[in-house]
Image (cartoon, rainbow, N blue to C red; front, side):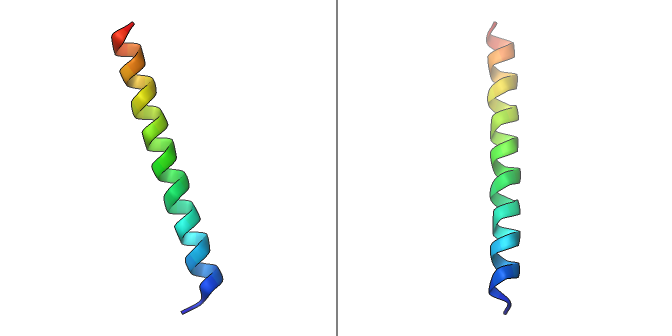
Length: 33
């Protein structure tokens, strides 16, 4: 298994997860206002 490829896909997974979490928190804040 290529280690650099694994790190790259893992970083993409973390980035997409953080984006979804940020979007969820933003939508939640908008609904509260």
